[in-house]
Image (spheres, each protein chain N blue to C red):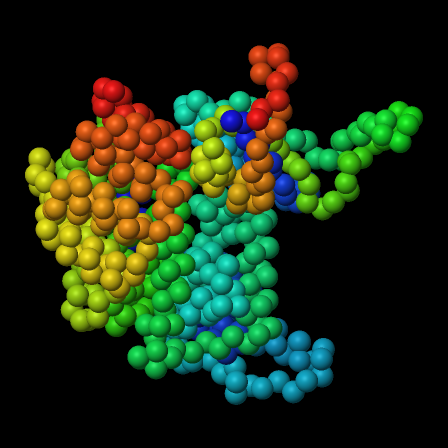
Length: 395
Length: 125
């Protein structure tokens, strides 16, 4: 496992990378050329710094070298094409005063023109992960990922997608699809452990929140993801058996991730705008506040789920709300809430909840519901859990 | 009920897939097939060699014809078959959604009409 200092050093390097690339690409829209220039600058640093010593402001040094490299290329390109070279448009910022343009870069990556590649593009340009690293985490062959990234960058250049931050009140709206895309990537279920993917995406969510500190949902998403990842180690017990969230052992949750989640949730709360991710994070925080052996605060969860489905009526949230209603108002009420939902016929959680509620009521229909739930459950641990419950009905 | 998951994708060229990505996909496939096996739904899982090595055999025009090359010379082609024994299409789709190959391929979920079970041919209804 990497030491703390190592992690900090890597984070600092990634922060620098995204900041510098954003500055280099802002005027030109040419991410690929900016990456080349930055790669040249890093290469030069590797040979110069050991000889000359590390500069006082390493980022400014890298920026100047990369800008000169960009300029050389434009000049030769301009000569080739006999086009006038606009020196002013490519003027370098004075070293030491490099503004953070990562938000502009994030918004470019979230532009509808490159929608399908948003998350890989953000991981690649803002955090500096390679196509190979991203491909490995998202289970895409390196060549496919590299081609996807190249196509998206060409598109950004061709369509001159603007590197600009909208007015404050429009920012949250523009950032919405970015957050959705990151969460979409985070919450995909694979048959393999998601740790590697989670690590990359937690870093991205943190960077987005840092780049858009006034957008409550950016913090809401970071909080939600940190709190979900915190509980991952307790999802199965020592024998690999699946444990439902209300029965997990809180001592096996990751305290550091919970603390990071709480920090983001407090910031989101202080900004005074409620949003979907913030509510989901608050639900996560209620679960994480449970002490060993205690039941979750169902009444509080009920209020949060009511607010969540009123604000963002997703099927998953509606099913989870029905499960909470079963705790606050009884299994029959939970079942009635479940019956009211449309489009949950193929949804695994809907069948798992239905089976457990029918089981609790002693209804014979529980057997068929368990069988259906088991047939559409692909996770081995959860499947075995449902099978144990089904056998327990004793019918 | 038997369902076939037919994997269709563009064939990668030599060196298109980095060794690490290849290993990653192999691990994902191993985990996925282990989950299928644990669930008791796996009949068979095969990934095919590139279609350049294919030979076609037919007698449909009268005489026996044996030819090198695939049936349809397309950029995207059948590259693998997973056979599952599941209660219904919902279950087949639930497994298809989790198939690692969805990352680079299109998976066709198709119900089996007739099959040979334990050496005995029988048409499913």
